[in-house]
Amino acid sequence: MAKRPNNIDSLLGSLSDDSVAGKTSQESSSGSKGTANPAIALARSEREIRATTERVPVLKLDPDQVRFFKYHDRHISSIESPKVKQLEKSLKEEGQIFPGIVRKTNDKTPDNKVIYELISGRLRFEAAKNIGVPFEALLKELDDAQAIRVMLIENEDRFALAPFERWLSVIPILEDNVLPLAEVAQLIKWDKANLSRYAKAIPFYKSCNLDKYLVDVEKVKMNALYSCFQEYEKAPKQVMKAISFVADNYPGVRDNLFLKAILKRVTEEQEVKADTVFLSGSKVKIKRVGTKLNISFEGLPKESELSDVIEKLRELNSLQ
Image (cartoon, rainbow, N blue to C red):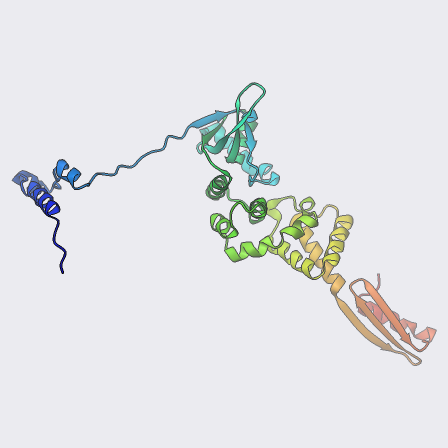
């Protein structure tokens, strides 16, 4: 059975149509849009929805009024990079165009000024502090999860973080389980599978104290770090030994070169070279695994024929 029309709606509809039809010929020729009677629109529960604006205070803060969010995502090497110098120049010439974002704390400075927690804008804060001008920031009410979302999104739109710096920044977020890995991946615009894969390397990075050797986030490649982790999974003691060897013998090597040196050392340790030398009175078996060399004689060799053994050792790169 067809649904009967609502009489009130029909009546209001016809009145509205009549109001449009009753336009003057001048209005019709000008092409202006007819407007329904506002009282009728109100009766039909129609109303214009206007955009609203949120008033967010912009604060001007002294350096002692700012402390850093516990999940802040800027590495010290970024703060000491030319990026801050670029911002200092911009602040001097144009002022602070983009404010940072802070949230209020319950703490105060010794002279009774409110302390705010910096959510985003660390580089801008450092630049403002360096040239002695107040740091401008929007005041927002955010819990930890909301603050992390704001921070991750905001920094994608400003000075982008290097992949290794971004990875370092999400370690505490994942360890504290503030946000699920899938959401973190989405926020930083990483493939979920890649973030999950790289997250497995976190215990390796921390247990081997790699922060001492990977000091410039711009010069560390995630693929090299992950390759070292894969070797660590297969032979942890060997990789730790390689780390100590590189650190002791090449103290100036850092960042990606340090990771490559570890991989090279591990490869050398794993490389197997073997051969047999046949002498008139004996047979000599030579086996080298990395820097470990094993030589066994079956029968006593003649002294005059030992030069053949030495030559074979040279061929196997087994002499210093």
